[in-house]
Length: 174
Image (cartoon, rainbow, N blue to C red; front, side, top):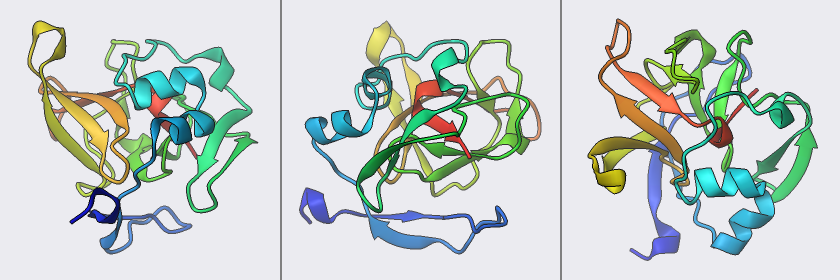
């Protein structure tokens, strides 16, 4: 199967925030120049080049955030919030708008990065081994577009004991 024809299984949420049945879709694959047109320079470095994001909410993301719409291949400015510990909603991938985490599973980890104890769907995030920085960690990425989201640790709260430690630059709250 060619790289352009890869399929992945994901789950979307309906207008009421309820998960729909899993579906098979094409994996989103873009060139570096295509991603650079859709993302801010900082978002590109974190989401596509796997840089570590800032530890606090960047003030530029409190409103009028640049977001992409992969269905129409457009970039627009909207009044969404990247991440806010007090707002309810669903956190989506900054690159492909796939629902990833619910604010209901977000918790204060004390790290400065947004932390969640479970993804919205097991289909929407994937993990792999990250051996950079002379340590072995578990990287977390978006299933549909391979956006680097952050890392997974085994020091989270119950009921899972997991901490999905994400980068603000990789997610957007709707």
